[in-house]
Amino acid sequence: MVNKNIATLETEIYKPDAIRMNRLAMYRKLSEMYGVDTAEEYLRQLEEHEIYRHDETGIIGKPYCASVTLYPFLFHGNTTIGGTSEAPKNLAAFNGSFINLVFALASQFCGAISTPEWLSYMDYFIRREYGDDYYLRAGTCVDASTRKRTIDKVITDSFEQVVYSLNQPAAARGNQSVFWNIAYFDKPYFHGMFENFVFPDGTPMHWDSVNWLQKRFMKWFNRERLRKLLTFPVETVNLLDDGSNYVDQEWKEFVAEMWAEGHSFFVYRSDSVDSLSSCCRLRNELQDNAFSYTLGAGGVSTGSKCVMTINVNHLVQNAIWDRGLDDVRLAMKEQVDKIHKYLLAFNEILHERQASGLLPVYDAGFVNLDKQYLTVGINGLIEGAESLGTDIDPLNQDYIAYTEAILQPIYEANKAARCNGILWNTEMVPAENLGVKNAAWDRADKLFVPRDCYNSYFFRVEDPKVNVLDKLMLHGRTFTRYLDGGSACHINMDEHLTKEQYLLLLDAAVKTGCSYFTFNIPNTVCRHCGYISKHRLAECPECDGKDLDYATRVIGYLKLVSSFSQDRQLEEEKRHYSAGLEEGHENHPES
Image (cartoon, rainbow, N blue to C red; front, side, top):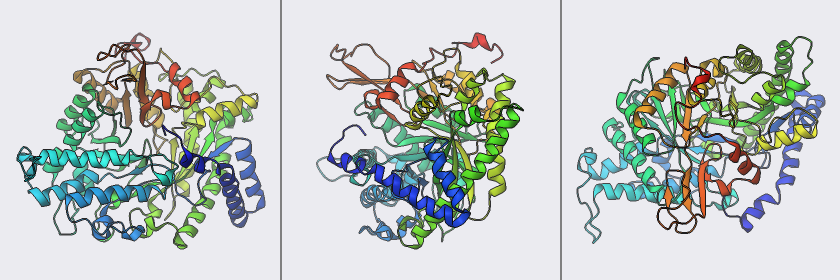
């Protein structure tokens, strides 16, 4: 949110009331399911900031985020969720109805909406109008008007219509734009996801044209951000590897090329088509990649129903310290048992809302409630380690043992509690606002608080001694094997690397087991003339002005630093931006 107005006020002013209503509903449901003592403990833990329920200011029974399938849209348009648009029949109708669909879907969720199939479905409508080989004839004029548009221009106009529309404020979200995410797939990932997919007319997806369209959008979006600093969509490229290298070398090269050209996006890598990065960092194991004509593309229909986060620093410092990390493990097991009950109570409320007809997005088949996760979040992990005097280092066995003591009990409890319709995962939450709140609350409780905003990583974001490869190691398999809901490794750099250097880092991600990562290089925006650069500049090259703003990721999405909250602006000032691959490697020569 950049600009605030009366629509913002209308949303913000009732937040205290919404919190009270949420807690009352949860108290009643917990009392019904587990007894009054559990309900009282839930309120106590919230009030003493041992846990945090995300988006408690929304209406009770509103789910968190979703990666949706667009398949029902091809049959019914928006009509099954209260809209008036019938199934799209051409490219123009698809673009307009898709925009309306995303706004409608986002109004039923607190957080992000991911549409992994968007470009694949757009490709279908382009092929219907211009033939399966349209991408080979992109320069052909197909417009009888005075504009004389080519196929390529029709396509980029479609990109522009959708992207600019979805970056507009939405009345249903308190004057915020929707949080919109998309996915790209390399060839083996694409076939693993959509091999048996067919459109309603019986035709399959076409890899060659989808491949071209994905790359065309990335190129267009990267250049468009030189005209306007567009926040959404948040992009993730899904790459398959064989444990030693990427299976699709063409996409590996393309990813490195796009990073070198200054584009900002995430990479999710896996050695099997078992999961999908659908939200800013939420990693969801796919229950069934097989396509069903009746159910749609079930493999992308996932997300999180609710996230409740444990304040790890608070838990560690309040654990009984007779047996070292064993006490931390015990405290975490007891906490997870409680938070499972809280999440199950919320799950029951969700099912009641669906039964009452209040969540038509599920009835319409865009997402399956039983395929979404109940998510245990964590925040304050490295702060807990620092309170013990543990050095945050990828080779420090004490730090490795500490992270296992925190994460393994959650992972094992989640695995044991898994059953039909109840899925669990653990996420290191972005904590855009929560990181600041937890630090302030813990400081008020006289606990050890090493920074004003708790980190969302396995490393100190301000530490100049942690180099790029260290960060990949700290978000590699050694540290994240019990973090099945994901954590994004944000690597802050002061300048873009070369394509060859990015190729080396892609290889390093496979070697270290880092599954989800991105590179953040500050962009410059001139307040005087509007010039945008992909680099951090001290002076505008167009007007010589020095009234500059900078853009980077606050956590998951790109925005102007001046639009960060005041506390987040202070946090951003302390971030360390590495000078290159060589910086700090003397600490770990073997890296």
